[in-house]
Length: 246
Image (cartoon, rainbow, N blue to C red; front, side):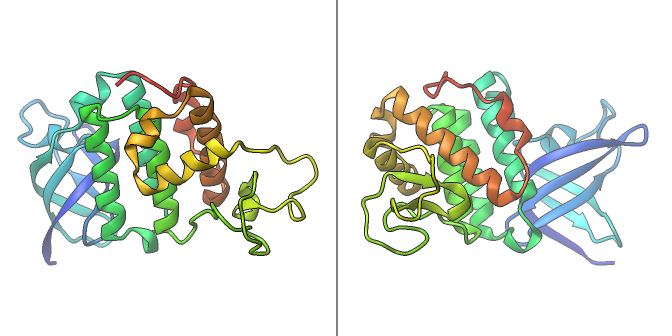
């Protein structure tokens, strides 16, 4: 059977037998990959630490029938230690890799890989508040998957904005005529923050108030979980403090 090489982000692992692990990765060119890493739980393993969640590695794999086999792994981004040392970074990173794992294989594109690597790198360096990095990632990964929320015109009828009602089930902002009864209104500042998070306008994101950041985070979480059709379990552990510790 052939071997192949690729860059990959480690999404999750679980034990197999006494010394092995099954590693789920998002690779740059081969999409999501599940592979067995033999002997990595032994202290003598040469590359076990390179195959932990949040790490980025150059891996060589042997193509198997159901699971591939990891033959080599060289570190490209050692983000794990700096992430797990901070609770807010760890929970945000956990939600990011869980989301990446939930997306179907058809959506695992090179752009998805690069977006996740960039988010984990930013978390490890403390470049912005962890919750803001997570929120920006969720908005962008939804857009890359074909589910970009409408943040201008009405998501249902196309009526020109501005609108102040965001309904996840309808695709984003909707006009007053299409908003279901009792839908909560969103401030113009929170809507502007959603646009900044989508565009990566970090000066505006970092300057946003705690109230607006919390409002935007709630909308983004609802929107992402609606399209993934089930909850992102890690989000339950992400701090409610939108500023977070950097």
